[in-house]
Image 1: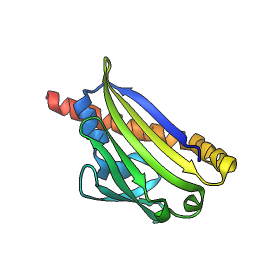
Image 2 (image 1 turned 60 degrees about the horizontal axis):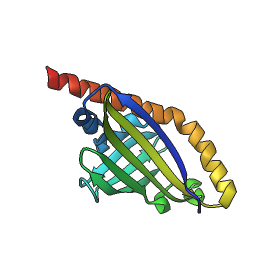
Image 3 (image 1 turned 45 degrees about the vertical axis):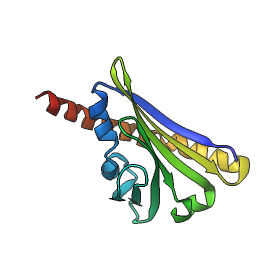
Image 4 (image 1 turned 90 degrees about the vertical axis):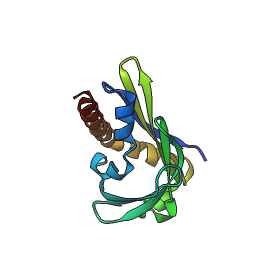
Length: 157
């Protein structure tokens, strides 16, 4: 069971607090991820639950298993609730969102970890999916950058 990681990162010219607010707004994730039509969130912090819906109306459940305020959080997907064929392809899937202070202000990293079924074939399919997901990850980072910059400007005003 080898894990495949798909990730993207960006340095954003906004303070870490404003960037964290943008990244940690888990209820706004559908506006950031183009593959989602909406999300429903219950709770907050570690233990938070999120239901994601794709454009076809299919949904799946996620649970927050790590919340380090101001720094990072992790969402674990209940792969048994995933639409087929993802349910058949993935043994486990999680995403980690993190914000780190840098000399340039903030570094955001979004990383998805998948443990595929089907051995080498499954890993190859997940890697190919990861290549196609690059534009979505860049879009997510674009959204976070716009939101963090707006928040930073509002604080400065």
